[in-house]
Image 1 (tube, rainbow, N blue to C red):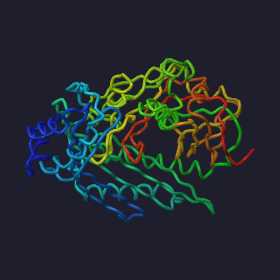
Image 2 (cartoon, rainbow, N blue to C red):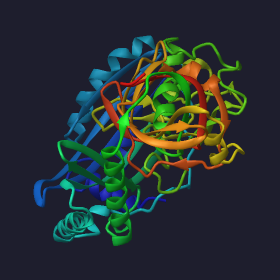
Image 3 (cartoon, rainbow, N blue to C red):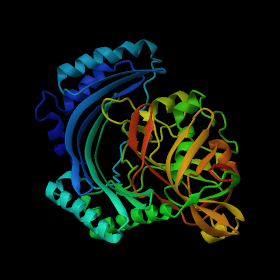
Image 4 (tube, rainbow, N blue to C red):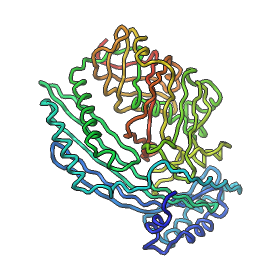
Length: 477
């Protein structure tokens, strides 16, 4: 359980508020609402970036504030402020009560309380001094430059945050959570002749900096970023056309996240703007495909003990053996669809209203050896890492660029290729999965998801997959 005394000290020590006053103000302000909550947030965040042996950017920020929401029918009123005071809450209440005329008069049940926590109650920013962090970044630069004379640029970044939230529900229940988050990113540019290529690697999670500043960890990160850069340095133009594609385990799950995951969020399906709307109980994928969203994985970047509405997170099966069986729900959309919230109500900060969002979304393992999957492909593409991508939620169309990919020739991994893009439809691509490996892997803790102008940390993952008939955009026939 979070340290309640510690949380109250942060929120109320220099204000005219306390826990009892907040509860009373919420009850009075949201009287007659179908649902709603007061979201209190305190956050510290920092970032330190070393570029070419010099600290180019170092920042530290702290912020606090509240968001007050009243929900009536399909309408929601939301007001927020950085001032924690009775007067500020009363002004916010006057704003959000404007939607109460839409109320159905049936107040939603309060979220259940939980004793579960999936990460330590710690402040990572206080666990290492600024000088210690600079020293680690400098050591990364020195080590990397000694690895290969072709290195031209090294960028290493450490970021961390410490977020404390308290959620006062309209029904009188209060939930709190303390959320650590750290991340290390390394990018390396190499050059040979007139050609330059980049490789990158990142790792992190809801842990302390001690997990990242260990030489074993950061040296491994340097080695992986350099390996990717050198692989790309020797790459040839990617082929173009429709072909089988083998997706590697772990981070390639970002394609699943974007092309399928967003389409399974409750708001898009309630409004019928998702390609998956009205398909509940129908086959939407091959029988070997099972997809889940799980916010309960220990220390994972996308995990939450409770979501930003106070609902405990859980393991939600979305697609089971190819059949659509669930959506990810916040409280508003679940109530309007006659379903239960799944603990997926998330917001970027107190200045944002919650939306149904993913936590850790991944495909479960199959029973095929990954080597057998590659051996089954006479000619195709093996995509190991992805860069950016775009998805249209309504149509399901996606375009993703592969940052590390190889030709498959006669069942064997061949030369690395550059410029490969995968083009397809999220709903269609799942029906084309023919083999699923037994090597399920989650990403290394770097995912950030954007939706409606809000960004939140997430996790992705999958085993090795064979997908037939994907259009590959490249530069050679």
